[in-house]
Amino acid sequence: MESVEHLIVGGGPAGLRAAQVLAEAGREVLVLEKRAEIGPKTCAGGLTRKTMRELEPLGLPAAAALASIGHVAFAGGEAVALDVDTTVVHTIARRTLGRHQLEWARSAGATVCSGTPAAGIDLAARTAVAGGRPIRWRHLIGADGADSAVRRALGLPSPREYFAAEYNVPELRLEPLRIECDPDPLANGYFWVFPHARYTSLGAVAPKHLVPPSFLRRYLNGRLERLGVARDGVPFEGATLEVVYHGCHFPGDVHLVGDAAGMVSSLTAEGIYAALVTGEEVARAILEPRAPAPKTARWLRTKRRHDRLARWLARPRPRAWTLGALARAAASPALRRPLASWFLQG
Image (cartoon, rainbow, N blue to C red):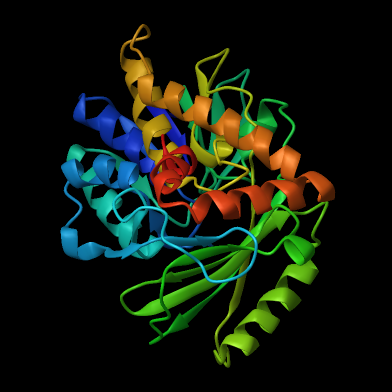
């Protein structure tokens, strides 16, 4: 039976960041990614300023992402820029981000196998099956997204209660980059327009128990039609999000990171930053069990605030009152920066 020191299930931002940290420390790392290609995923591809602070020192080229000033509309009307510095969002195709992270992980010495799902995960025996062969691991990291096999093996609930959907329309530059709350059809979710260098992502996210995924597709079709955007030949993409967090470290040297750990904000749906920092800090905790995890701790404090507001906004009357108050705050130049910081801090 093949043995590996560190087995990582999932080759997204969290898994590849963990692989890079472990491999740079001279550890043996095997990453299993079930998809044939590293990177592509239903995702608006927005990198906030704090996310860029994680990626730029790793070598992400400035030209890899398109910088835009983010706008928001809380209660209808024209979207406004809360703060020209705080709300800068860099958009990058997940395929491009995955290509860079794959290069960094492999250059560090990690082995990454795409098109190779992990099956038959046996936590007691510390084994999994990949490509028809059993593999024994010493440390297991679940970085396999919302539908995490490692999370299920741990017996953790996986409600995946949010659904995100998008159309990536090629050769379209629709501006400004914006998020629009649309409370009647989307409850506490939102509609987004994220321009990229060669396409624009138009999508929406909402909790499934309030907005059925089938309705979300019809809603997006209507929004594109009203914007005059043709979607002929453009595939509809959708994915669930896991926002319920139960921890990163579990008995038997099993760990969860990123979406598999439920790190996504249920208010903003931001997940790439949390994936990167949990991937890094969980790996550092494996290398040195007493290593601090300050970025993960800060993000969890932010996420708890976001999750509380998302639950409040799930109720119609509080939602109407709160979004109106946020719209009034956004109209005040003195309140725009603190408002933007509250939503985007890490």
